[in-house]
Length: 118
Length: 111
Image (cartoon, rainbow over all chains, first blue to last red; front, side):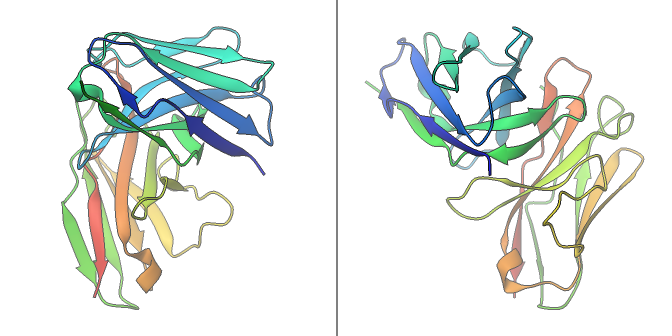
């Protein structure tokens, strides 16, 4: 059974770089597309982007903070990096398997909470 | 960015049926059949209920059904159960550049 587990620093200072990891078990990072979604407190889910091992990516152009996704095949992890974060980036961040052809997320991690504060 | 519109809340009694609407536009629901629905219980990750408008993943009860008319998608839950009390989000492909957009979420209360 596939499981996803997000991890991150919890607290990040404004203007710093946020780095999150998503460790995948029960499947290989090579096999599927992987996406990131976030949810600020009391707000709707927000699509961040998706990534595939070949380097195929899509990032939400509405995000004000630059985003980069990558993969570490040795750890079977996908990563999310956001540079120069602000308080608006405080949210619960989820990674999920992305079904690119049909544009939905069918397996989700439990999320990792990120607070941007000095 | 464009977004989908859902009612903030709906309610129903056990055994009843309820429908949650999700209003979009010609950039998303009105043109494409890439509509999905998610259920989220408090402090839990979202769970996929419906994809491609009306398809259910294995393990999702057939009490949950999806449909679409024009630019509005709907999720119907029949035979309401107490465990159905949760937040529900719709999502769609969008050709505006954001690729995937979500609704604001609907809180279902089972009376």
